[in-house]
Image (cartoon, rainbow, N blue to C red; front, top):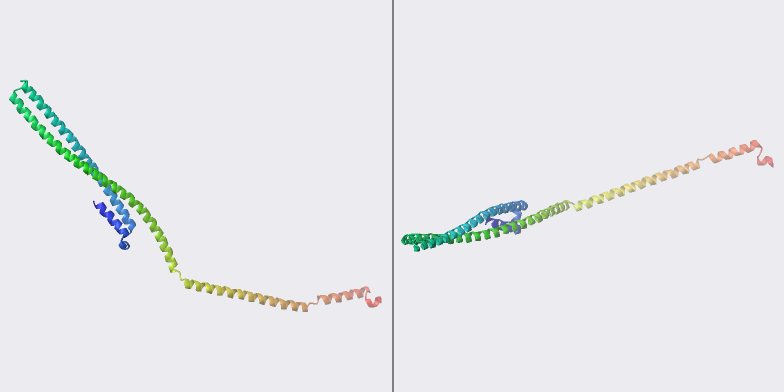
Amino acid sequence: MNVFKRLFKIGQAETNSAIDNMEDPIKMTEQGIRDMKQDLDKSLEALAQVKALAIRAKNDQDEYQNKAEEYQNKAIIILKKGHSKEIDATEADRLAKEALVQKEAAEQQVLKSKEESDKFDNNVAQLQKTIQTIKGNIGKWENELKTLKARVKVSNATKSLNKQMAEIDSTGTVSMLERMKEKVAREEALAEAYGDIANAKKSIDDEIDKAADTSTAKANDDLAKLKEKLGLNDSKEA
């Protein structure tokens, strides 16, 4: 059946390096599974039809067997009636002979029907075996499809990651980091320099302010004047 050819082609495609030049393997596998399910439906329909023929052949066999037995019984009855003078002996022989001819014809039909019944039974067995094979292959390929889809997801994710990693310029990145470090070092040095300048300027201003501070002298002068006013100068006390 063509289903096995498709199964072989799908299996061959999986192991063949030419799969890279084929269409999406997932879509192809899905289509293959759909084809197998269609073949399964056709096989089930054929099985039903062949079973019907087998049943009919068996029924025909039973029917012709019954007819052969009936003609045999009728021939016996006719001969007995001829022997008992119920009917003319010559006529009884003629009718009994005709009954035996019909019996022989019915027996031939029994044999023919049996051959057909056996043939249909073999066809039914073959179709059932084929159906079981198709069902098994459908289950197998559905599981394979699940695995294939998972592998494709992993493959795509890995490919995307590897592509991103491949597109990263490691030399350029290191160079950029070095430039950033150099810039930060310059900024830190500049900040330290400004700090030194600010501290230096503050120290000079402090020295100047200290040197120009007259608050202590003025306080001494004010003290001397107050003592003089109060008559507390050391010279007068003496």
